[in-house]
Image (cartoon, rainbow over all chains, first blue to last red; front, side, top):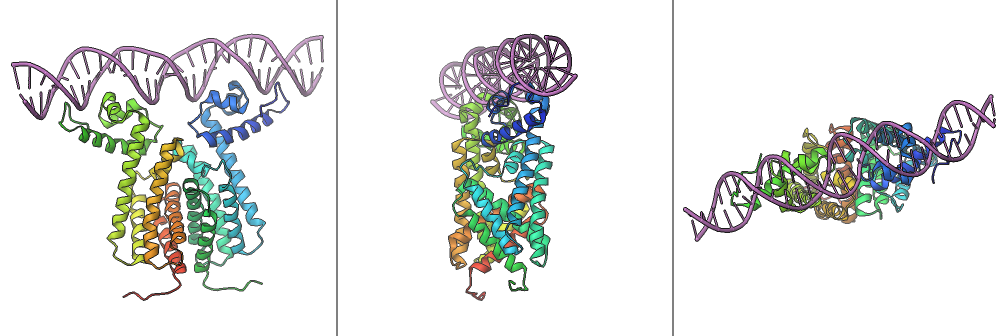
Length: 200
Length: 200
DNA sequence: GGTAGATGGTACCGATTGGTTCGATCGACT
DNA sequence: AGTCGATCGAACCAATCGGTACCATCTACC
Protein backbone atom coordinates (compact mmCIF):
# COMPACT_ATOMS: atom_id res chain seq x y z
CA UNK A 1 0.00 0.00 0.00
CA UNK A 2 1.82 3.08 -1.26
CA UNK A 3 2.14 6.21 0.77
CA UNK A 4 -0.20 8.96 -0.38
CA UNK A 5 1.36 11.56 -2.63
CA UNK A 6 2.20 15.04 -1.52
CA UNK A 7 2.26 16.12 2.06
CA UNK A 8 -0.51 14.19 3.74
CA UNK A 9 0.06 16.68 6.52
CA UNK A 10 1.35 13.74 8.54
CA UNK A 11 5.03 12.88 8.16
CA UNK A 12 4.78 10.56 11.12
CA UNK A 13 2.10 8.65 9.31
CA UNK A 14 4.49 8.21 6.40
CA UNK A 15 7.15 6.97 8.77
CA UNK A 16 4.76 4.48 10.34
CA UNK A 17 3.62 3.22 6.94
CA UNK A 18 7.20 2.72 5.77
CA UNK A 19 8.00 0.91 8.99
CA UNK A 20 5.03 -1.40 8.68
CA UNK A 21 5.62 -2.33 5.05
CA UNK A 22 9.38 -2.61 5.44
CA UNK A 23 8.93 -4.96 8.38
CA UNK A 24 7.12 -7.47 6.21
CA UNK A 25 9.50 -7.21 3.27
CA UNK A 26 12.66 -7.39 5.36
CA UNK A 27 11.30 -10.36 7.28
CA UNK A 28 10.42 -12.19 4.10
CA UNK A 29 13.55 -11.42 2.12
CA UNK A 30 16.16 -10.99 4.83
CA UNK A 31 17.92 -7.80 5.83
CA UNK A 32 20.58 -8.09 3.16
CA UNK A 33 18.37 -9.97 0.74
CA UNK A 34 16.86 -6.84 -0.75
CA UNK A 35 18.44 -3.58 -1.84
CA UNK A 36 17.25 -0.15 -0.86
CA UNK A 37 16.00 0.60 -4.36
CA UNK A 38 13.75 -2.47 -4.58
CA UNK A 39 12.75 -2.06 -0.96
CA UNK A 40 11.52 1.45 -1.68
CA UNK A 41 9.54 0.16 -4.65
CA UNK A 42 7.90 -2.56 -2.55
CA UNK A 43 7.13 -0.14 0.25
CA UNK A 44 5.82 2.42 -2.24
CA UNK A 45 8.01 5.29 -1.24
CA UNK A 46 10.84 7.21 -2.85
CA UNK A 47 14.41 6.79 -1.78
CA UNK A 48 14.68 10.38 -0.66
CA UNK A 49 11.70 10.02 1.65
CA UNK A 50 13.04 6.83 3.18
CA UNK A 51 16.45 8.35 3.77
CA UNK A 52 14.98 11.51 5.24
CA UNK A 53 13.05 9.48 7.78
CA UNK A 54 15.66 6.89 8.72
CA UNK A 55 19.03 8.28 7.64
CA UNK A 56 20.53 4.97 6.56
CA UNK A 57 19.38 1.47 5.79
CA UNK A 58 20.76 0.42 9.16
CA UNK A 59 18.65 3.13 10.74
CA UNK A 60 15.54 1.68 9.14
CA UNK A 61 16.51 -1.82 10.20
CA UNK A 62 17.02 -0.80 13.79
CA UNK A 63 13.82 1.21 13.92
CA UNK A 64 11.81 -1.68 12.50
CA UNK A 65 13.39 -4.17 14.90
CA UNK A 66 12.57 -1.95 17.87
CA UNK A 67 9.00 -1.59 16.69
CA UNK A 68 8.63 -5.30 16.00
CA UNK A 69 10.08 -6.27 19.37
CA UNK A 70 7.63 -4.04 21.14
CA UNK A 71 4.67 -5.28 19.10
CA UNK A 72 5.50 -8.95 19.59
CA UNK A 73 6.18 -8.60 23.29
CA UNK A 74 2.93 -6.75 23.80
CA UNK A 75 1.05 -9.37 21.79
CA UNK A 76 2.46 -12.20 23.90
CA UNK A 77 1.84 -10.38 27.16
CA UNK A 78 -1.74 -9.82 26.09
CA UNK A 79 -2.18 -13.52 25.41
CA UNK A 80 -0.92 -14.23 28.91
CA UNK A 81 -3.13 -11.60 30.48
CA UNK A 82 -6.18 -13.01 28.73
CA UNK A 83 -5.51 -16.46 30.16
CA UNK A 84 -6.48 -15.65 33.71
CA UNK A 85 -4.46 -16.05 36.88
CA UNK A 86 -3.35 -19.67 36.76
CA UNK A 87 0.32 -19.95 35.72
CA UNK A 88 -0.31 -23.24 33.93
CA UNK A 89 -3.06 -21.63 31.89
CA UNK A 90 -0.77 -18.72 31.15
CA UNK A 91 1.95 -21.00 29.85
CA UNK A 92 -0.59 -22.82 27.74
CA UNK A 93 -1.65 -19.47 26.33
CA UNK A 94 1.94 -18.64 25.45
CA UNK A 95 2.52 -21.79 23.43
CA UNK A 96 -0.90 -21.70 21.84
CA UNK A 97 -0.17 -18.19 20.66
CA UNK A 98 3.22 -19.31 19.37
CA UNK A 99 1.63 -22.22 17.52
CA UNK A 100 -0.75 -19.83 15.77
CA UNK A 101 2.29 -17.81 14.72
CA UNK A 102 4.14 -20.89 13.48
CA UNK A 103 1.14 -21.81 11.35
CA UNK A 104 1.17 -18.54 9.44
CA UNK A 105 2.40 -19.16 5.89
CA UNK A 106 4.93 -16.34 6.11
CA UNK A 107 6.47 -17.69 9.32
CA UNK A 108 10.23 -17.71 8.97
CA UNK A 109 11.44 -17.95 12.57
CA UNK A 110 11.99 -15.19 15.06
CA UNK A 111 12.71 -11.97 13.18
CA UNK A 112 14.91 -10.68 15.97
CA UNK A 113 17.11 -13.75 16.07
CA UNK A 114 17.28 -13.90 12.28
CA UNK A 115 18.36 -10.28 12.19
CA UNK A 116 21.10 -10.87 14.74
CA UNK A 117 22.35 -13.82 12.72
CA UNK A 118 22.65 -11.66 9.61
CA UNK A 119 23.57 -8.20 10.71
CA UNK A 120 26.79 -8.07 12.68
CA UNK A 121 26.13 -4.63 14.12
CA UNK A 122 26.37 -3.94 17.81
CA UNK A 123 23.12 -1.99 17.87
CA UNK A 124 21.21 -4.95 16.48
CA UNK A 125 22.69 -7.29 19.07
CA UNK A 126 21.55 -4.88 21.77
CA UNK A 127 18.02 -4.80 20.42
CA UNK A 128 17.73 -8.57 20.24
CA UNK A 129 19.18 -8.98 23.74
CA UNK A 130 16.62 -6.52 25.06
CA UNK A 131 13.94 -8.47 23.22
CA UNK A 132 14.90 -11.68 24.99
CA UNK A 133 14.97 -9.69 28.21
CA UNK A 134 11.33 -8.75 27.70
CA UNK A 135 10.40 -12.38 27.19
CA UNK A 136 12.37 -13.31 30.27
CA UNK A 137 10.52 -10.72 32.31
CA UNK A 138 7.17 -12.11 31.22
CA UNK A 139 8.20 -15.66 32.00
CA UNK A 140 9.73 -14.71 35.32
CA UNK A 141 6.39 -13.25 36.33
CA UNK A 142 4.65 -16.53 35.54
CA UNK A 143 7.32 -18.55 37.35
CA UNK A 144 7.09 -16.32 40.40
CA UNK A 145 3.31 -16.50 40.57
CA UNK A 146 3.59 -20.26 40.28
CA UNK A 147 5.68 -20.33 43.42
CA UNK A 148 8.69 -21.88 41.73
CA UNK A 149 11.60 -22.75 43.96
CA UNK A 150 13.88 -20.58 41.78
CA UNK A 151 11.76 -18.42 39.49
CA UNK A 152 14.72 -17.05 37.56
CA UNK A 153 16.02 -20.49 36.66
CA UNK A 154 12.57 -21.68 35.65
CA UNK A 155 12.09 -18.54 33.57
CA UNK A 156 15.36 -19.16 31.69
CA UNK A 157 14.30 -22.73 31.06
CA UNK A 158 10.97 -21.54 29.73
CA UNK A 159 12.74 -19.01 27.54
CA UNK A 160 14.86 -21.83 26.16
CA UNK A 161 11.64 -23.67 25.32
CA UNK A 162 10.09 -20.64 23.64
CA UNK A 163 13.10 -19.90 21.46
CA UNK A 164 13.83 -23.55 20.80
CA UNK A 165 10.28 -24.22 19.71
CA UNK A 166 10.49 -21.27 17.35
CA UNK A 167 13.70 -22.55 15.79
CA UNK A 168 12.38 -26.08 15.43
CA UNK A 169 9.09 -24.87 13.96
CA UNK A 170 10.98 -22.76 11.45
CA UNK A 171 13.19 -25.61 10.25
CA UNK A 172 11.25 -28.81 10.79
CA UNK A 173 7.78 -27.44 10.26
CA UNK A 174 5.17 -26.07 12.64
CA UNK A 175 3.22 -29.26 13.12
CA UNK A 176 2.95 -30.17 16.79
CA UNK A 177 5.80 -27.94 17.88
CA UNK A 178 3.68 -25.62 19.99
CA UNK A 179 2.16 -28.57 21.76
CA UNK A 180 5.54 -30.15 22.43
CA UNK A 181 6.74 -26.87 23.90
CA UNK A 182 3.60 -26.46 25.97
CA UNK A 183 3.79 -29.95 27.46
CA UNK A 184 7.47 -29.51 28.22
CA UNK A 185 6.78 -26.17 29.87
CA UNK A 186 4.03 -27.61 32.05
CA UNK A 187 6.29 -30.49 33.04
CA UNK A 188 9.02 -28.08 34.07
CA UNK A 189 6.48 -26.00 35.94
CA UNK A 190 5.34 -29.03 37.92
CA UNK A 191 8.89 -30.10 38.62
CA UNK A 192 9.77 -26.63 39.90
CA UNK A 193 6.80 -26.26 42.24
CA UNK A 194 7.02 -29.17 44.64
CA UNK A 195 4.19 -27.78 46.74
CA UNK A 196 1.05 -28.65 44.82
CA UNK A 197 -1.60 -26.10 45.51
CA UNK A 198 -5.09 -27.13 44.47
CA UNK A 199 -6.89 -24.89 41.98
CA UNK A 200 -9.49 -22.75 43.78
CA UNK B 1 47.42 -21.15 6.96
CA UNK B 2 47.93 -20.70 3.22
CA UNK B 3 47.82 -23.55 0.78
CA UNK B 4 51.27 -24.58 -0.44
CA UNK B 5 52.24 -23.21 -3.83
CA UNK B 6 52.31 -25.25 -6.97
CA UNK B 7 50.72 -28.61 -7.25
CA UNK B 8 51.09 -30.17 -3.83
CA UNK B 9 50.16 -33.31 -5.73
CA UNK B 10 46.96 -33.26 -3.68
CA UNK B 11 44.07 -31.17 -5.00
CA UNK B 12 41.78 -32.72 -2.43
CA UNK B 13 44.07 -31.49 0.27
CA UNK B 14 43.67 -28.00 -1.13
CA UNK B 15 39.92 -28.38 -1.12
CA UNK B 16 39.92 -29.56 2.48
CA UNK B 17 42.15 -26.70 3.56
CA UNK B 18 39.90 -24.15 1.88
CA UNK B 19 36.87 -25.73 3.48
CA UNK B 20 38.38 -25.66 6.94
CA UNK B 21 39.58 -22.08 6.79
CA UNK B 22 36.43 -20.81 5.08
CA UNK B 23 34.28 -22.44 7.75
CA UNK B 24 35.88 -20.31 10.45
CA UNK B 25 35.80 -17.08 8.48
CA UNK B 26 32.21 -17.49 7.27
CA UNK B 27 31.05 -18.38 10.77
CA UNK B 28 32.76 -15.35 12.24
CA UNK B 29 31.76 -12.81 9.60
CA UNK B 30 28.51 -14.21 8.27
CA UNK B 31 27.85 -15.65 4.84
CA UNK B 32 27.20 -12.29 3.25
CA UNK B 33 29.46 -10.39 5.60
CA UNK B 34 32.60 -11.05 3.59
CA UNK B 35 33.26 -10.88 -0.14
CA UNK B 36 34.90 -13.58 -2.18
CA UNK B 37 38.02 -11.48 -2.69
CA UNK B 38 38.65 -10.91 1.00
CA UNK B 39 37.58 -14.45 1.79
CA UNK B 40 40.24 -15.79 -0.57
CA UNK B 41 42.86 -13.59 1.06
CA UNK B 42 41.91 -14.83 4.54
CA UNK B 43 41.89 -18.43 3.39
CA UNK B 44 45.18 -17.97 1.58
CA UNK B 45 44.06 -19.12 -1.82
CA UNK B 46 43.57 -17.48 -5.19
CA UNK B 47 40.13 -16.82 -6.58
CA UNK B 48 40.71 -19.14 -9.50
CA UNK B 49 41.51 -22.04 -7.19
CA UNK B 50 38.47 -21.45 -5.06
CA UNK B 51 36.16 -21.24 -8.04
CA UNK B 52 37.66 -24.33 -9.65
CA UNK B 53 36.95 -26.32 -6.50
CA UNK B 54 33.52 -25.01 -5.61
CA UNK B 55 32.10 -23.38 -8.73
CA UNK B 56 30.32 -20.54 -6.98
CA UNK B 57 30.26 -18.89 -3.58
CA UNK B 58 27.01 -20.72 -2.91
CA UNK B 59 28.76 -23.97 -3.77
CA UNK B 60 31.42 -23.24 -1.17
CA UNK B 61 28.79 -22.30 1.39
CA UNK B 62 26.84 -25.48 0.86
CA UNK B 63 29.94 -27.66 0.93
CA UNK B 64 31.12 -26.09 4.16
CA UNK B 65 27.69 -26.41 5.77
CA UNK B 66 27.54 -30.09 4.87
CA UNK B 67 30.99 -30.63 6.29
CA UNK B 68 30.23 -28.66 9.44
CA UNK B 69 26.95 -30.50 10.01
CA UNK B 70 28.71 -33.83 9.80
CA UNK B 71 31.53 -32.75 12.07
CA UNK B 72 29.25 -31.33 14.74
CA UNK B 73 26.88 -34.28 14.68
CA UNK B 74 29.74 -36.71 15.00
CA UNK B 75 31.23 -34.69 17.85
CA UNK B 76 27.95 -34.71 19.76
CA UNK B 77 27.35 -38.40 19.12
CA UNK B 78 30.84 -39.13 20.41
CA UNK B 79 30.11 -37.22 23.61
CA UNK B 80 26.99 -39.32 24.09
CA UNK B 81 28.81 -42.56 23.36
CA UNK B 82 31.49 -41.69 25.89
CA UNK B 83 28.90 -41.20 28.62
CA UNK B 84 28.04 -44.85 29.03
CA UNK B 85 24.66 -46.52 28.81
CA UNK B 86 22.50 -44.50 31.16
CA UNK B 87 20.19 -42.13 29.24
CA UNK B 88 20.38 -39.51 32.00
CA UNK B 89 24.15 -39.55 31.83
CA UNK B 90 23.96 -39.26 28.07
CA UNK B 91 21.74 -36.19 28.26
CA UNK B 92 24.08 -34.67 30.79
CA UNK B 93 26.93 -35.30 28.38
CA UNK B 94 25.04 -33.53 25.60
CA UNK B 95 24.47 -30.35 27.56
CA UNK B 96 27.94 -30.39 29.09
CA UNK B 97 29.38 -30.58 25.59
CA UNK B 98 27.11 -27.75 24.48
CA UNK B 99 28.20 -25.63 27.44
CA UNK B 100 31.84 -26.10 26.46
CA UNK B 101 30.91 -24.91 22.99
CA UNK B 102 29.02 -21.89 24.34
CA UNK B 103 32.05 -20.91 26.36
CA UNK B 104 34.33 -20.69 23.35
CA UNK B 105 35.10 -17.03 22.61
CA UNK B 106 34.17 -17.41 18.96
CA UNK B 107 30.75 -18.90 19.74
CA UNK B 108 28.12 -17.12 17.70
CA UNK B 109 25.19 -19.53 17.81
CA UNK B 110 24.48 -22.52 15.64
CA UNK B 111 26.18 -22.02 12.28
CA UNK B 112 23.51 -24.02 10.48
CA UNK B 113 20.63 -21.99 11.86
CA UNK B 114 22.50 -18.72 11.30
CA UNK B 115 23.11 -19.72 7.70
CA UNK B 116 19.46 -20.52 7.12
CA UNK B 117 18.49 -17.17 8.58
CA UNK B 118 20.76 -15.37 6.13
CA UNK B 119 20.81 -17.33 2.93
CA UNK B 120 17.38 -17.79 1.40
CA UNK B 121 18.42 -20.65 -0.83
CA UNK B 122 16.49 -23.88 -0.92
CA UNK B 123 19.63 -26.00 -0.78
CA UNK B 124 20.70 -24.36 2.46
CA UNK B 125 17.30 -24.97 4.02
CA UNK B 126 17.59 -28.63 3.09
CA UNK B 127 21.01 -28.92 4.70
CA UNK B 128 19.87 -27.33 7.94
CA UNK B 129 16.74 -29.49 8.07
CA UNK B 130 18.89 -32.58 7.62
CA UNK B 131 21.14 -31.28 10.37
CA UNK B 132 18.25 -31.07 12.80
CA UNK B 133 17.21 -34.51 11.64
CA UNK B 134 20.57 -35.88 12.75
CA UNK B 135 20.15 -34.31 16.18
CA UNK B 136 16.66 -35.72 16.37
CA UNK B 137 17.95 -39.17 15.56
CA UNK B 138 20.51 -39.00 18.33
CA UNK B 139 17.96 -37.77 20.86
CA UNK B 140 15.38 -40.33 19.77
CA UNK B 141 17.89 -43.03 20.53
CA UNK B 142 18.35 -41.70 24.04
CA UNK B 143 14.62 -41.34 24.57
CA UNK B 144 13.99 -44.87 23.36
CA UNK B 145 16.66 -46.40 25.56
CA UNK B 146 15.17 -44.48 28.49
CA UNK B 147 11.87 -46.24 27.91
CA UNK B 148 9.95 -43.04 27.30
CA UNK B 149 6.21 -43.42 26.78
CA UNK B 150 6.51 -41.64 23.43
CA UNK B 151 10.18 -41.46 22.42
CA UNK B 152 9.53 -39.28 19.37
CA UNK B 153 7.72 -36.64 21.35
CA UNK B 154 10.39 -36.62 24.03
CA UNK B 155 13.09 -36.39 21.38
CA UNK B 156 11.43 -33.34 19.81
CA UNK B 157 11.18 -31.74 23.22
CA UNK B 158 14.84 -32.42 23.83
CA UNK B 159 15.68 -30.97 20.42
CA UNK B 160 13.75 -27.84 21.39
CA UNK B 161 15.91 -27.62 24.50
CA UNK B 162 19.14 -28.09 22.57
CA UNK B 163 18.36 -25.44 19.98
CA UNK B 164 16.77 -23.10 22.49
CA UNK B 165 19.76 -23.28 24.78
CA UNK B 166 22.02 -22.48 21.85
CA UNK B 167 19.96 -19.43 20.92
CA UNK B 168 19.80 -18.17 24.49
CA UNK B 169 23.51 -18.73 25.02
CA UNK B 170 24.26 -16.80 21.84
CA UNK B 171 22.18 -13.77 22.80
CA UNK B 172 22.10 -13.64 26.59
CA UNK B 173 25.52 -15.12 27.25
CA UNK B 174 26.69 -18.66 27.91
CA UNK B 175 26.69 -18.46 31.69
CA UNK B 176 24.55 -21.23 33.17
CA UNK B 177 22.68 -21.96 29.98
CA UNK B 178 24.02 -25.47 29.56
CA UNK B 179 23.05 -26.30 33.11
CA UNK B 180 19.56 -24.91 32.68
CA UNK B 181 19.12 -27.01 29.57
CA UNK B 182 20.52 -30.09 31.27
CA UNK B 183 18.22 -29.80 34.29
CA UNK B 184 15.23 -29.21 32.06
CA UNK B 185 16.13 -32.22 29.93
CA UNK B 186 16.45 -34.47 32.97
CA UNK B 187 13.12 -33.24 34.29
CA UNK B 188 11.44 -34.04 30.98
CA UNK B 189 13.14 -37.41 30.94
CA UNK B 190 11.75 -38.23 34.38
CA UNK B 191 8.31 -37.00 33.46
CA UNK B 192 8.28 -39.16 30.32
CA UNK B 193 9.38 -42.39 32.00
CA UNK B 194 6.76 -43.08 34.67
CA UNK B 195 8.27 -46.50 35.38
CA UNK B 196 11.28 -45.78 37.52
CA UNK B 197 13.85 -48.43 36.93
CA UNK B 198 16.62 -48.53 39.54
CA UNK B 199 20.14 -48.06 38.24
CA UNK B 200 21.91 -51.45 38.15
C1' DG C 1 -3.67 32.63 -5.04
C1' DG C 2 0.58 32.04 -3.14
C1' DT C 3 3.99 29.92 -0.18
C1' DA C 4 6.23 26.11 2.28
C1' DG C 5 7.10 21.52 3.18
C1' DA C 6 6.73 16.67 2.03
C1' DT C 7 6.97 13.61 -1.62
C1' DG C 8 7.87 10.83 -6.17
C1' DG C 9 10.76 9.88 -9.89
C1' DT C 10 15.01 9.62 -11.84
C1' DA C 11 19.57 10.23 -12.86
C1' DC C 12 23.74 9.74 -10.81
C1' DC C 13 27.88 8.64 -7.71
C1' DG C 14 31.84 5.77 -5.99
C1' DA C 15 32.48 1.44 -3.93
C1' DT C 16 31.91 -3.32 -3.82
C1' DT C 17 29.91 -7.50 -5.37
C1' DG C 18 30.41 -12.39 -7.54
C1' DG C 19 32.76 -14.19 -11.20
C1' DT C 20 36.23 -14.66 -15.40
C1' DT C 21 40.56 -14.65 -17.72
C1' DC C 22 45.44 -14.76 -18.56
C1' DG C 23 50.26 -15.26 -17.99
C1' DA C 24 53.83 -16.73 -14.83
C1' DT C 25 55.30 -20.18 -11.68
C1' DC C 26 55.98 -24.30 -9.25
C1' DG C 27 56.05 -29.31 -8.18
C1' DA C 28 55.43 -34.04 -9.63
C1' DC C 29 55.96 -37.50 -12.99
C1' DT C 30 58.00 -39.53 -17.20
C1' DA D 1 64.93 -32.40 -19.74
C1' DG D 2 60.52 -31.63 -20.65
C1' DT D 3 55.52 -31.92 -20.08
C1' DC D 4 51.36 -31.27 -17.42
C1' DG D 5 48.29 -29.88 -14.03
C1' DA D 6 47.56 -26.98 -10.07
C1' DT D 7 48.36 -22.76 -8.35
C1' DC D 8 49.04 -17.49 -7.66
C1' DG D 9 48.45 -12.74 -8.53
C1' DA D 10 46.32 -9.32 -10.76
C1' DA D 11 43.69 -7.25 -14.14
C1' DC D 12 39.22 -7.07 -15.59
C1' DC D 13 34.01 -7.42 -16.11
C1' DA D 14 29.03 -6.25 -15.65
C1' DA D 15 25.82 -5.74 -12.01
C1' DT D 16 24.44 -4.14 -7.87
C1' DC D 17 25.13 -1.86 -3.60
C1' DG D 18 23.99 2.20 -0.26
C1' DG D 19 23.48 6.86 -0.65
C1' DT D 20 22.90 11.82 -2.83
C1' DA D 21 21.08 15.50 -5.76
C1' DC D 22 17.67 17.70 -8.46
C1' DC D 23 13.23 18.98 -9.86
C1' DA D 24 8.35 18.64 -10.73
C1' DT D 25 4.31 17.89 -8.10
C1' DC D 26 0.97 17.80 -4.62
C1' DT D 27 -1.32 19.30 -0.21
C1' DA D 28 -2.04 22.06 3.75
C1' DC D 29 -2.18 26.49 5.41
C1' DC D 30 -2.37 31.54 5.02
